[in-house]
Length: 161
Image 1 (cartoon, rainbow, N blue to C red):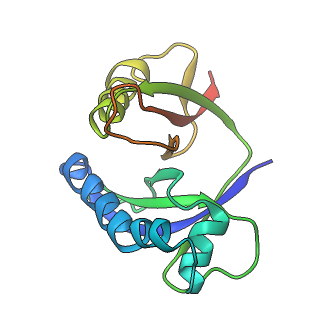
Image 2 (image 1 turned 180 degrees about the horizontal axis):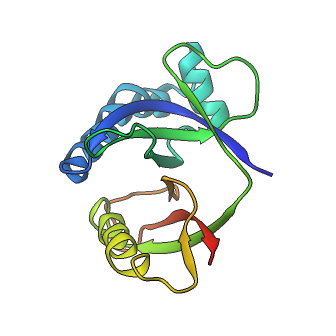
């Protein structure tokens, strides 16, 4: 079966995403994560959704805008049902196969390096798989993303040729 995510959405350009997406994460951490870690008492519907759904576990790229290299990006978590607070976006992935690529190293460099290799080396000319949907998911483990042994994973939806 497929699954749904919920999160904060912004549009980015392929040309400057590697610089601007980390700033989006910094804003999210400053506005929501640091205050929630300090108080551990969610007050608003958005703060409750962040805690209940684990918003911040995923970075979701969705290439469905169809204009000049722009795509949607969500700082997201698992959606468990119910109403979504205003300001958050829901997105549903259909049931499909995923290729998963492990990343080890400090963020965002380690993840960006693996992402570049996937889309410039692994996918082009791949005799076994093609991309199944204009999307991918970044999974982030808990812990300090600046450490050299930090782990994350990139999920790419694929179909067999």
